[in-house]
Length: 341
Image 1: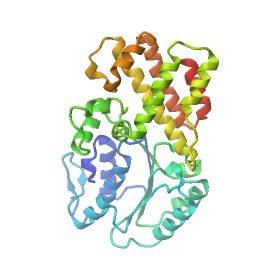
Image 2: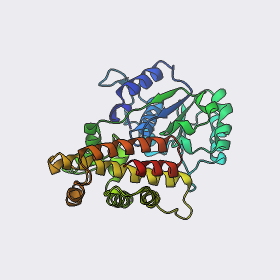
Image 3: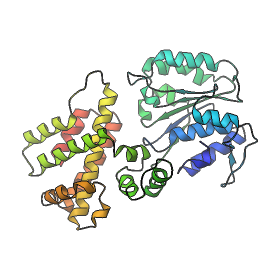
């Protein structure tokens, strides 16, 4: 994908393109920010720009741009270029040291067919400690012709020694309009339902796409069950029991990271329900609801969750998700949440 085709992040895209054109690009970077906002697409777009067979020309924003049409750009976009290597978590949900050692050995040689070898480590926070340590020497003494891009929405899980060797570019969330544009223009989502999905996504295309998945619908049902259980402001013991139910059971062969992401999904679903309860309490138009199919149930819950309580609930969920992403204990986060709602 061409850098210019990525939605949002105009400043970061411009800085990267200009640095690449002036041969001032750092040999390693951390691309951090919320999940599903286009960080990996920017990394792939940068790889295209660095290896495009045509002379990169100024795009609409007046910065260098890859052609997107030459053989190299097409191969990179398809993920089959020999010098653009993507390292991602395996079946265990982690990136093990063997994967990193193979990439480090390959990076020691000159690029095979392109001008620059680009190594994209997707979900870099899933690198086990041994794998991160295996990267250190390469990050300290990067081989000529290679660029390492560590993509993560949880940079705090990278070792301090890794972060200290990689300048960090922080991405923000997309606007609701930008998410709608991507859903309609690139994902084939109907224009009638895209705004509701975007409103529930908190600036993340990945979350917006997820709203129709079975996993998301199950997460939303768990969140709705928690709302029903807490509606009457039960005593602390019952609140903590509700939190245990919201945690969900541990699935066989699932990693701690996968369980944490599942809980985050349920909490975000809970946040959208609180948002909708505020709309219902304010007698707003049902078209504004992110969970329009639950409108009748939200109406039934609204006496227990007036605008003030729903607003506090939304803020509490937002804080809980933030704490969870900072690696706080899921059990502590959920207990705190259910005691405050």
